[in-house]
Image (cartoon, rainbow, N blue to C red):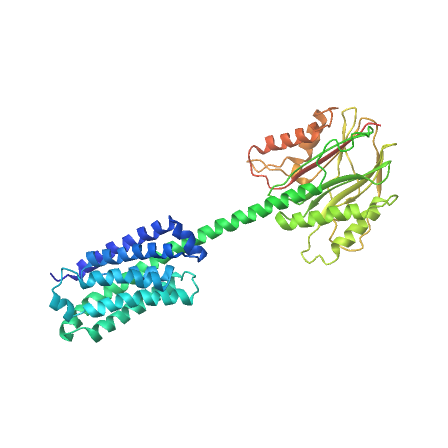
Length: 455
């Protein structure tokens, strides 16, 4: 019985829905990985021949004379090459020849030969496009253009070969517009689903690779800074503890301490501009330069001067680091220091009083070459603690967008009294900051360094 245009449209629309199911099922098999990696095995290709061949038969069986039988070979050819395209086409072509709904004389006399030929050529053409793109799946627009162009060719082939012409022409004019639209929509949907999932997998793989690299970078970065406490168990004059919590996988804060001779402990804390990998690299360079430029007897302002000039040289990224550098005489408690734009530290006296260290601020390192830094001095009495920190402490934000502030830090240090700093002071301060943040996202690295002078 002849199909109405509405029957044709309904039938083709139903077949298009099956395309989405086929595309989804393919992404849930091992073929998915083979397609993405462009390493289809013969077994995989034969399996795909069966899948797309079955779809071609299904489309022909449900669609009658107007169907999307060619879509199966098109899909197979685009993802599996000529073998899959032609192999799956043979299923659809064979079914079309033996379709019991059409009489043999009509079947052979009108469009059977052109229909069979068009199905095989559809798989071959899609396979050729696969070879031309070297196995890379085509885009949605290109797939749409391919489907429209090929079905126009199919239309011309039917008119050229089909006989009698007076029967073929009105049937083709009626069937081909919805067939062209259906093939274009079906192939576009199929390619869109596959491309979307392929891109999703590639994005996930790239993300996992980046996370792995960041994890390695974090381990390397953490190995740059001292993290074993107490660091000098045989030296009774001082106790030192420090902590660092990067806001991201890798951070830009730094701290370090080392003896330049038997009596002088050098210490530094710094905060690099920016976040992420670039800040971490600049942090590693800065930390290395501080130690490399420190010599016995050299004052802290000269050390900052040298490091600053090193960082300014070829600093195309215009990054900088704030730094507080000091040298403690463990025999006398005297500290000579120089500040490069960093937060001045606090002194927690053995009496429980907390003092903010007022000093010249200086300029961050890496901003301007040949900058002259200023030297300051202070003294620690036995039992006093010098507490250094980065602005990730005082600028921690809670859910109400309030800052932790210097005043809260000072009040906290005052209430901790004369407690030991053997891990307690930095850990308790960190806990206080996180309690204040109450689950708000950490926006900056949190770093602290505490030095207690025992005398």
